[in-house]
Image (cartoon, one colour):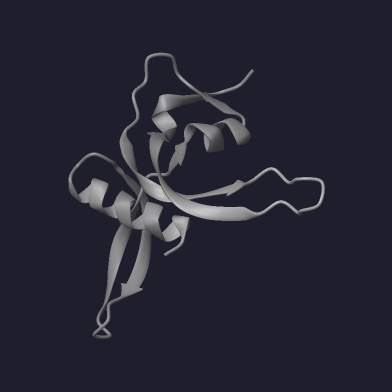
Length: 105
């Protein structure tokens, strides 16, 4: 499962629990039995680092809305004779909503 799928599935669950709000955007989905229905997509959540890369900063005093595990990539340092090797592992990440961030001036 990709990080996008992990975040989407957890976002839907958090919206059902009332932790996240809906975005107002509807999507048509089909289940394994071929049944289709429309669902409202949850509001967008990102990690601190992702918000920062988008030009936002988390407001002072804000606590993460959610925390769950996603894939993380790391690359080991290369020796002179070897090339760097990368590996993937699961790591807990903390997520913030748009209401918890502000645009960097």
